[in-house]
Image (cartoon, rainbow, N blue to C red):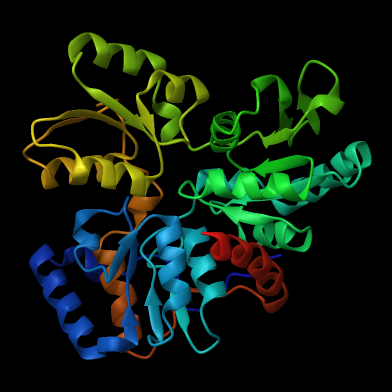
Length: 367
């Protein structure tokens, strides 16, 4: 089991931070960054708010941030502007002398929460009883440290949306079947892209402990955990159809956490990094409808005024848990560090770390 260290200063945001103006908070952040220098490192996910991301030392998707965390050996304090599982990963990939902080401990991930270690171990016991030693587990990095450790000790690996295709290809050289968790959509879309038909994919329901599958179970090649991203689940085929009707010249590009039907209806699909790079390299005057998190879409729109860009679903909300990391919480974390306190620290126990690193390093070696 992963262990989160929440030291006494962790708790509700002190009221004084709610009374500060944005200018006051930004001034304090700049002062602390200058004071701490190389001892402070701030990685931030693409989905973060602009008020926080402006101070990031590295911006990226989950794979990029995992890589920069693994390479950074200099900073003592790593203030991770993302969600809980990302901070766990950063802690496991950094040295014992480095300390990882999450500005708001409530910044979790609903997808990661859909697969707990007890359900996973129970599923693995049933699946290996049925299929024998023909299965390898893969877990999306959007999972807890305990799930990463599970894949590590069972010969599997982590994947991100950037390298899912490469990792699934690798897994199929190791075993006949894949157990993919916790996001069924990324697993399904990736396997289908590699030529595995839907008829050879089953969905595992962790609540009932049963397959959603019709046919001979021995034909199954990919077992998908019944989990999903609540943000990307919000994009529909109807959204794509509406764009086609209103903006027939538009290219629809979506994240592979979207449903199979949406990915098939879109023109392009790929990781957060892929979406960012594709729009960046697109010619001026091109038109795009993007199916991913709203903070990122708004940032892309602002960065490319020479292009016509909209959200695939204009009514989508940003990732609510990612948005818990705001400027007041961010400043609070920095001031605790400045004052020699260690609140909101993320620390994964040694046994979990060692097993999870097997999974993470298999990914990083192939990434």
